[in-house]
Image (cartoon, rainbow, N blue to C red; front, side, top):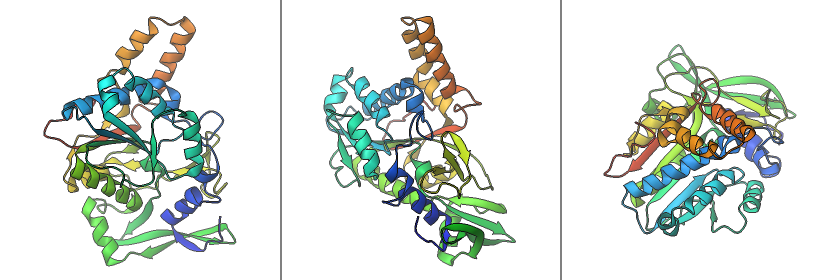
Amino acid sequence: MRDLKTIPVDKFIEEALYNKKTGYYFSKDPFGKDGDFITSPGISFLFSEMIAIWIIYFWEMIGKPKNFSFVELGPGDGRLCKTLLNTFEKFPQFKNSTKIYLYEKSEKLIKIQKKNLKGQKISWIKNFKTLKNCPAIFFGNEFFDAIPIKQFKKKNNEIYEKYFKFKEKKFLKTVYKKVSSSMLQELGKYGILKFDGIFEYPKSGLKELALVSKKIKSLGGGLLLVDYGFLGQNNVSTLQSVKKHKKNMIFDNIGKADITYLVNFDLLKNFLKIQNLNVNNVVSQSFFLKRVGIIKRAGILSNKMSFKEKSDLYYRLQRLLDPKQMGQLFKVICAYKSKKKISLGFK
């Protein structure tokens, strides 16, 4: 990490995660048992299968276009995409209509993805200019929480932005600076200035969402995001760091540990509505996966399994669905441009 001085929270996260020489996502494989954390596709292939079924349903609902794009935002180690491709093989009409794109900025992760997806017809992209002339569905699992976030504090009706002060790469203290009138106006759009305390604003994440929304509005299609987060007001810092599946102090192991936060799904919903897209009510991961059919699918598969295999299948399923594990903490949001209502998983 460079000898930084006083920088806002989002710039600190950007440097820690995305510095091309020392950034976390540019220097290591963070996924799985030997990494720092595990995501839903790594817990059970059933998660990825349900996403595949939902994508095919979406394609059917918009009229089975002969040309269709699927874009995975932040594809991790490529595990989800691998299961999607295996599932798509069973639906030849959909498969033959669809081009697969992986949106990834880290060269380190692209290498891992290419190794895991060797021989597959996939294009890697770093912007959305390639997407033309046909509807597209964008999907991201734990994509949004990996984008740097700003933090602010409201006190006595004044708004201050949070900064971290460093000396010789060591954290010294937190500093608050009064925000500009333009930033105040921007923050006022999303109903997050109501209460005193700390609040978080995903300025960079909303820029990404604006680009996705623009494509959906011009081409048709939609967006499905799964992430861990909250609804309502949550006026505390949700910044957290993880290393080797354990909590890590934010300023320890900079560049060698993940830094993330809880996603404000009310804010996302408001933003997507402002973009003039149809937006479904936010639901829990458990609700979504059950409605798409994960329990029924598990039941069919378990009929042909040994006791040990069956136990493992349901143990992993419980991790995805249990409200004390990922079931309630993770949320799902869908936005789209279509005359037909997209309801699977949300009703």
